[in-house]
Every structure is written in C-alpha cells, then in structure tokens.
Length: 171
Image (tube, rainbow, N blue to C red; front, side, top):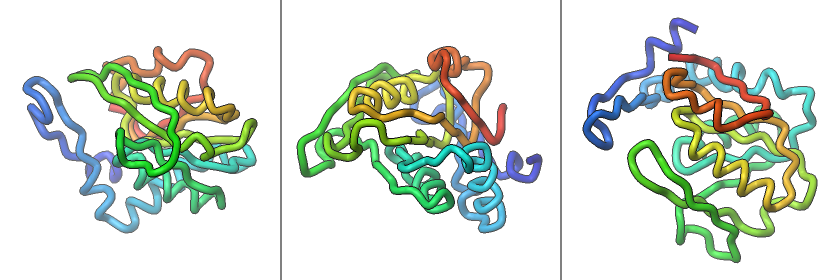
C-alpha cells in the first residue's frame, strides 16, 4: 500500500485557499497501481452480489466504472446538474468549500437493486451522504461504500452512520 500512497500528490490551496487537495491522477496513470487499487477497492464486495456500481462525478466515474467491470456489474453515474437527458432525481448538499448538487436518472435502478457506491476520496462525507440519500430515495439496496482514499482527520465516516465503509488508503 505504501507504493500506492506514494503516487498520491498533495496540491495546496486547491480549489480554495486552505484546502489540501489529494490528486490521484499519478496513481491513475500507473497501470499496475491502478489495477491493484481497483482490486483492493472491490475485494470486500465480491461476495455481495453487487448489481450496480454508482460513481459520483467526476473521479468517481473512473473508479466506479472500473469497479463495475471488475464486479461484472452495471454502472450508474451520479452527475452534476444539467448533464443527464431524461427525468432526474436530485440532491443538493454542502461541501468543505461550498455547495453542490448531484442528479441521477429516475429510471437508473429498479427498487431493491444491490448497489455499491464508489468515489475517489472520503473527506467530510457530504458528497457520500448525499449520494446515499439519492440512491435510497430511488429504492436502492446499498451494500456499501468504497473509497480509494479516506482523509481520516476530516471525519467523513461520521456522516455515514451504520453504513459499511471500505477504503483502500488512509491519510
């Protein structure tokens, strides 16, 4: 895991002053590291009969789609407003440095579908909590949440009480 952690770059003051952005693009650019990361991301969920993986825009698309392929599951994108062409369900939420909204097609998943939620980083937990709300509003059975990196000092896991949360790396 130290090899993977070494591929995470910290960018100070992005996107706002005071934010220490964790950039996973060097990890994503290394084929062996990316493969190891995806395997570590999905390993705890292989026996869970995951039918769909949902990923948040934008880096959640990368890891979510790869996780879906590894689990032989479909992929559901959770998008920024105005990007989906059919009827949507939406949720707005607070970020560490502002507010945001996510949308999903209302017909993206049938009631009871077994869904794994995937994103790159668990920070304050706002995006993850909003995504859980959105998926469950549509009737998903959430089997867990998986993150490449958890920033433990920001205590995002506390916003996901009673949820199965898995992370590959922690800082």
